[in-house]
Image (cartoon, rainbow, N blue to C red):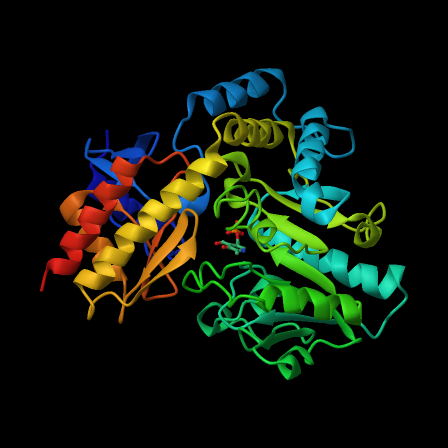
Length: 405
Ligand SMILES: Cc1ncc(COP(=O)(O)O)c(C=O)c1O
């Protein structure tokens, strides 16, 4: 087996240097635990950045993937795919309480799902509705919607946009959140769509003030603007409801999903209400791998396991436990920890400065893996089946990292 230093050196030589990677090579996982190639064990509280709700190598997911792989891995969307139809049915049932009847489109990632949502909204406005003037799409400062050109144009953080301009002229970024009524006036009868995260995740686990999303929904309804909720990070149980918006008592016209949906197998999806779904006709949009049998079988297993193991209730309880532990750190280190953010198992501890050194200390000293959100926030996004003991172990690691001079 190659030495980890050799592997890291090869990675630095062979891969485009677009990631800031931590210098460990992970090899194996089980539940919330990971092992690197040297045999060192880590407590993983990142879950592949919120992409592994069932943790690593969950036996049910392994079986579902293996069984599907034996039967059929991939066929194109030139033909009907049974697991895709069953997944659409399952997602529609979960979305129905808030969104009513929906239709699904499947792709491979969050960025692609948002790209599809934006295209659907634009085509619905310009073509189905015959409103060629409705081309502008709005988003918010601090948001993150992906790395494609359109989603970068709508990502409200300069560091992700720099060097890629000029970006699309129909994208505009609004202040976040829009407090007063006059702020919402930026959304007009000429706005095609607005895209928003129910909680800004990459932006630093920023929960919008109470009433903001509801006011946004009302303004979009009044102006005939398509409202897109980017639930790539908040969806699939992460915040304690099936989808983040369902805790707010409101619904989008289109919702995008990815990350946790297939437990680590690449997938993306949009769900659109029946009206807006008419924006796509045969040929409007497509994806070679989107909704293939393997990814859909994995997603069906994830949804079923979240349900049968009552993980939504568990997320509520674990989220409260985690936030209480983080709040104790704010009390203990008032100068080093500013506030607790988040909902369910998407939680963050905001620091006064760069969170990367603290995250590094947790890994080096305690073998606990965490990630940074928004530069200064330590993010916890563990598997949904994490136990209180495992969370406590993460909290102790963070406490030790904060204690050091
Ligand atoms: C809210 C949100 N939207 C979109 C994306 C992009 O997803 P992907 O990396 O799968 O393209 C992310 C990824 O972090 C995200 O958090």
